Length: 92
Image (tube, rainbow, N blue to C red; front, top):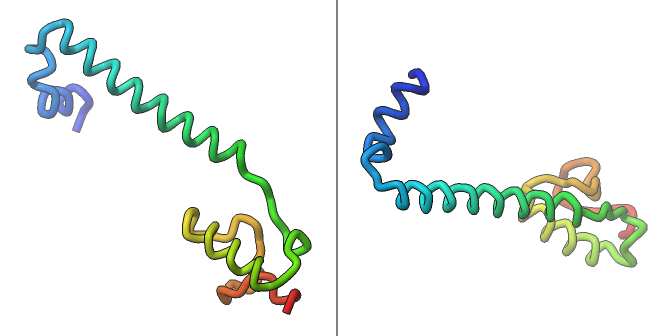
C-alpha cells in the first residue's frame, strides 16, 4: 500500500477538519512523540552497569536481577552468564 492510499484510507476525515482541530491533533501527536523520546533518553542515560562484585550476597544480586529482568526481559548486566535464572552464582 502506498503512502497516498494509506492516507486516503485512514485519514479521510483529516482534510475535512477545521484548521484549529488539525493544529490540536498535530500538537497532540508531537507531545506523545516527545514524551516517548524523553522516556527513552532517560532510560538510556540512567543505566548504571552492575556486576556481581557490587553485591554482598547472592540473594541481593538475585533480587536486583529479577527486578531488572522484569523491566527489560533480558540480562543487561550479565549477572546470569549461563542463563539458568540464577544471578551471581559465585557469591553462594
